Amino acid sequence: MVTGWRSVMASPPGPDSTHRVGGYKDRLWIPRVWQGMSFLGWMRLLVRNRFRIAPRRIPLALNVGLSGLCVSSVLWAVQEVLFGRKIQQAKIEEDPIFILGHWRAGTTWLHELMVRDERHAYPTSYQCLAPNHFLVSRSWIGALLGLLAPSQRPQDDMPFGLERPQEEEFALANMGLPSPYLTMVFPNHPPQYQEYLDMEGVSGEALDRWKRGLLWFVKCVTFKTPKRLVLKTPPHLGRVRVLLELFPRARFIHIYRDPYVVFASTVNVWKRFYRDQALQVPKYEGLEEYVLETFNRMYRAFERDRGLIDPSRLSEVSYEAMVADPIGQVRRIYEELGLGGFDDVRPVLEQYVASQADYRPNRYDLSPEMRAEISRRWSSFIQKYGYPSAQDED
Image (cartoon, rainbow, N blue to C red; front, side, top):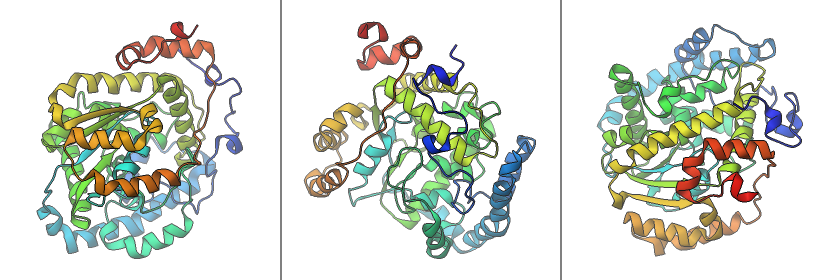
């Protein structure tokens, strides 16, 4: 078992090196991803974790709690009165396209490309931040938050904006549903709701509640923008069976990447999220083991259930191929999924790709011991998707 951060990087940042890790530090005016959670949902989370909040993060906890009490809970009631029935009656004309992939596998890049198509819609950052009331609050609260929000994502310096595509997992968490992302709030406690990474052991009312929540959010977004949705959230990689129960004609795009890069980048992104979003000062204990295990858990579920997908509704692509030829790979995806209309989309795709030409991903140096551990623990993935093992590189 890998036990320490020092086995990952040759020159690792220490637990207090915010200037190297990046992030928001304790700047309260920057909106957190939990800002739109209801007061009851926030209190349930605090009670579940026995209010073990670091003293320096108490103002943040009060900030989110007051926001939930005075804003989110009230506006949720307003939205229900004004739009509740219309949301329930909203028709999903075409089942969504789901982008599947582990964290740092290129899902955001692919999501941005797919939503260049004007026939597609997507959950925005604001909708995921305020899923309970975005229909009634976007024009004024969203405008205020837009002034406070950062222009780049803290985890990788990619552009951020309240109208840019976002992961609906944040919406589910803010709706009070169980989510592995709640680990970010109390990172020094055991990881939370890990069963929702593959839905194993989630049954009965808990499963029905989760499915109702996702369907309700999809209907909210569809009511606002009645187009085919392109959805992206890494935990969906292990939820294929449940997603098909909700959306039997959904299409799926699976993107995968060099596992050594994925590991190092995922460790880094969790460090940044823990620093920015937590109510504790993170210690990062067991973080490497967490990444190793969750990767295997999600891919075991995906490989088990991928046969449930109609072959004509699944396309797969490597991140490396996407970087080498993004236009060509998107064309292939369109053809394999029968989406049509690629020639109409191509000009805007080319414009977007050109605008990202200067982006450079972060680079990480793994120790030989860590590469060997990844190669051993993720050997099934490495063999299936054609990446070299640590032994092959020697």
